[in-house]
Length: 288
Image (cartoon, rainbow, N blue to C red; front, side):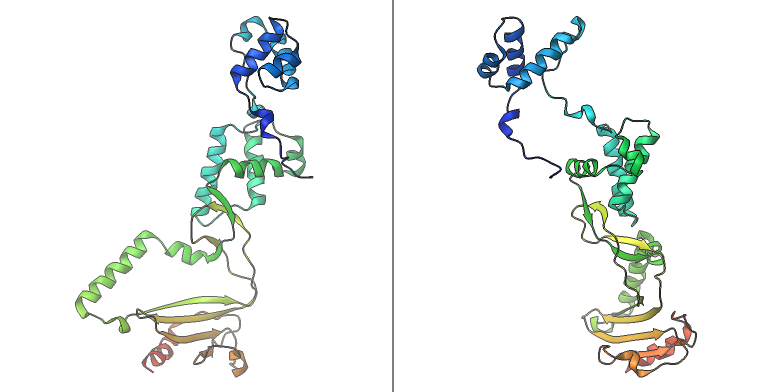
């Protein structure tokens, strides 16, 4: 059974004035409900419900009585509270700590419980908001989407900030103005860890339109292989340089590697990090 039924739009194609006129025609003029509903193009059952509610209300309440639906009568959060949740979700995503669907539903339950709001009993049973609330929240806040982020190490996350990037480009501009390097002599070298245990990141809620989405992760389980990649400003690259965390290097470790790939063993099992001992080897590879 679908969670959201497809209803006939004509059932709700009435405004407050039509409904008020139909109710008053029945209560004050004595017109039958069916006739009043047909005359003012509203549903008979809806007119009957509003007539009962209007008659049961106190005299001082009838002046401000609403003849429009109150769709928010069962809303758990106010609009301001939902906007706060949206802001928190977007901020978490920008900090590379995006919330998964499960974590968002749990956050909503904790938020409602902390503010002593009225919410379904099933939320306490599951310690999380329901699926209906989540779907409604996503429909009301169109700036958020559910996407799969890219794993980003904690060191890279901390190092990639405005101050570090500004310092890098400042030094690059000083060297370029002094030595006037051509494009084929400007190289960018970076190292990354390749894990033999690949795990996809769970989908998280993030802003729509963001092309690059990251998720901070700790060290992967399994063994890491360090890869050093080098490319110049013209797009030409040097074959990868691999460091295996083992005592001895065997050639079969390079099966399937790109042509020209160089590799060494670190000499320390489980430790494949790049050290100063690898610098002379890299210099020789670049010169070749």
